[in-house]
Image (tube, rainbow, N blue to C red; front, side, top):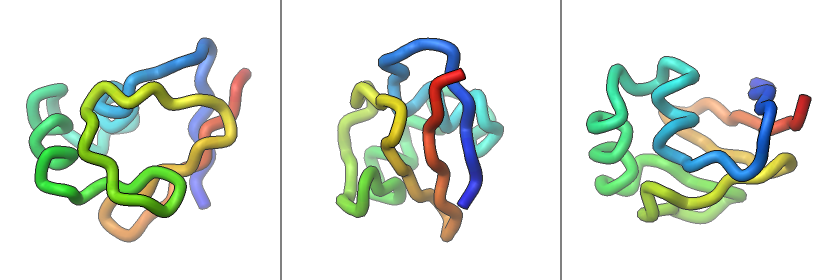
Length: 70
């Protein structure tokens, strides 16, 4: 599992995809979320602006990412 360090909470889901380089742009991140390609804590997530907190886990393209507060 990959760790993602965040310096504040909450962080919107689409921004995490963009900042981690999993999507080239925020628009692309919103599209992959809309298409149901991202799960959060084991559940499909369709809300682009879902508020993510430390301890949340999201999955994309077979990789898992755990959020940790710096």
